[in-house]
Image (cartoon, rainbow, N blue to C red; front, side):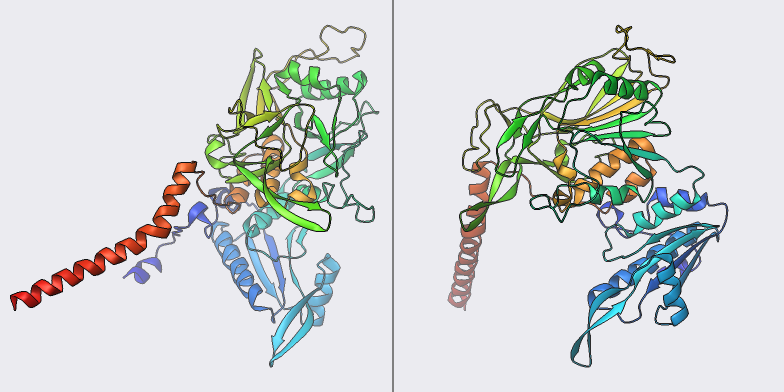
Length: 497
């Protein structure tokens, strides 16, 4: 009966957490709004390792469902790259061959194959060069469809010129592997044009929708601050990933004077000069001589879902983010500006002040336990920082923002560097923030639903002892009690007989 009804009425039911196997409402809306044919060509080799069969099936399921909502405007083609003409087409699109280990006739063979897809709309094309995971398949496909069908490609500007980590990974430089934003840049380029911005030019921010100030280490001049200020007044948005203290490879620290404190304070937030430590933290690996050891490290704060702002899509569907050596934020009330605190520590966090000692064995200072905001979103009509400085004002100067603007602030730039994006939701958090400022909220719900990491509930010392008691002693005791009860019942039965 269920099959009979399902064959005549189109519907989907997904009972998994975050609707993992059903396309999101945002995807359905984007598909319904397609006004012309979009072609998705999937180039997957026929012979695949067992771990990749499920991915091929999952891509097919997602595309079938997307197509069902598109009113015939999404055309899906699965092509066999074993055919010479198909292989040539894949290579011409920029989809590379990858090496795969395949077991065939009891032999392990290394073969070349394809695991990519292309999205074509008119003369525009976007590719997914290698698909090796189910985690973000829906997001990648819908983002590519949205990008090729959009009339306008929005621009995200990466500020440079102040010692920021590069956008490309410096693998050839000893000691700098992973200290870059190359993975963040790759993720952003799926939806945006990404530009490196040098503020020495007054027109550097022309056409930019969101300015990222991430990881600077040298001071900003007043002229540069003026360009940033007027960009905000013109209706631009700012994402500030800023460190108040630099942490070197040797765990030595250096307070950074960026000359931005007064600017941020004027807008409504101040980044503290301290580090936050928390009982909710991630393990960190350290070297001591020839030994390598992994320990819980309170300086690597693990922000978890109960302490996220539930009403904002940037964090509402995330589960955990790892924030290494992060500074607290202090909110300053400003007329016309609303401050929404997105992330908090637990109530058992504490601060470390200068001089810092980041040794993992010296972190158990439990005094002054409190809760601290770690990220904030400012929204409103901001007043210009330079309203009282006549000397620097130029033609076209704006004393107030034309439209309500956003400033996203977090006292940390390290969490989204390449080596920290292994914590899966760090990159999702940064991308959610950029999407919220630059594009719209639709893509956030698609990405976040597959990016969850269920954390164990934080227990008190007494709670841990209780769990240990239950796990170790209670079950054997229950078995003994059950056995003794059965024995007594059997004896009574024999006595009655």
